[in-house]
Length: 84
Image (cartoon, rainbow, N blue to C red; front, side, top):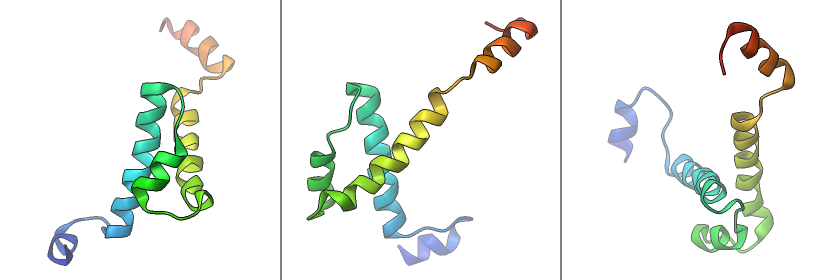
């Protein structure tokens, strides 16, 4: 993995892979089921305490909210621009 990491234009590590997997797992589960079973993720990650796993849920929630949030002002601007 070290050779691969040296060739990439961004930071790469096993920790970042785990973090990316856990965050995307939360996002995918939310999209598919409307909720995230944090205990399943805890088992997948090999954590002994749900508090450790809960960090990934917090980050995923921030991503989900930022993707889904559109303020009333954005809607007005879109209407003025003729975008529906």
